[in-house]
Length: 510
Image 1 (tube, one colour):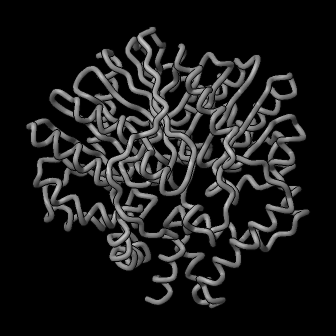
Image 2 (cartoon, rainbow, N blue to C red):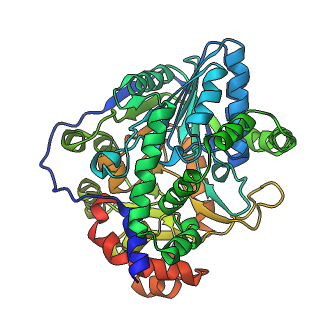
Image 3 (cartoon, rainbow, N blue to C red):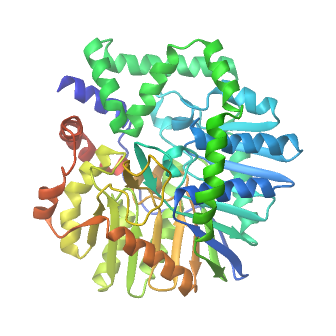
């Protein structure tokens, strides 16, 4: 029990903050009635194929912004394509959130990218020891080309977002647009790129930050070999623990070893060529089947960069999302990896339900989630929301029916990572915004909204209904209790019970 409690401390890193009274919300919001070409990517390999084709089409500049950005095969071919464009004279800028990226794309990878002509910055470079400022993250995801086309949504740059991991993948959703709002999306990139929280990282500061984080983690483990051994076993069960484990592993490696790994990252291998072949085949087929159409009533919204009390008081994405939720005429479908309504979201949902409108939700089960502590809270609160009228469903974690993947992936565990709302029969949102307090209060987010597009909305509803076939309908506490541990190994079950009381206590911060 002592070991597991310390592991929870490694997950949480959160401080308690009081609620705030109403303040004027600050949000970048742009509306356009000009027709935009829209494509929705629901399958991973097709989404990666489209990103690669976007890079090929670049002539002037490429702007990239991600929360997670690793060194897996998908990231290798993605970055090798960027290097090729940079050498052709295209301006390439990459902005990465520091938190989950630094164990993968470290300063030595950055040196290689910079030598190839690519500019790289990290957002909010802080040690975990400074956990108040440290928890404010840039959760936005963007690839924008020449001011003409852009793609955003739930996907980061890592194999599990493109259906390429043989262990675990995310069902996700992206939206690609061409039209005037691309300029607004690039304008927000400029805001984040030039903000004081975004900075270049040199080797000296990198060593300092890694030393501080390693010390912080080791202190939580008290140098106990039993704890460290169990940490290694349980790390794969949670994305934050996995991050900390990678930090510890990196601390044992010499700079020369890290530099050689970084050099090889940009050298095309046989495995890279194999993946490019799979993209040209299955990826192209998936992309060709992606729903396309036009939207003449679009809204782009984004948070601004920031941290601290004023940022939490005025962070404005929640006001946009909650407004469109309240505006539904009959039904809203919410597809989110996490479902923990904060104060404002609870009020919006209650208003919809009191007006006798329908609310349907798909989120992760304990088996499919990458965040055990979030699921522990969800299981505690969802029965009361069901009584209020919410139609609740949890994704079971198996590959959906008629979902094509490359060989070796079909037996992997799957989770949902979609961040989407569907409004009635003619509107929807796709973006980076989760239905949880971190997206409402702490993480900078972005999203595109489309209205008056029944064909595209029907595609959204069809995909939602398809996912329902791979989900379990929760009609009350009894069903939840019967199925919440389906397919769960003992180690994950034990961790669930340990983190549950802490997670529920700090649910406003998850």
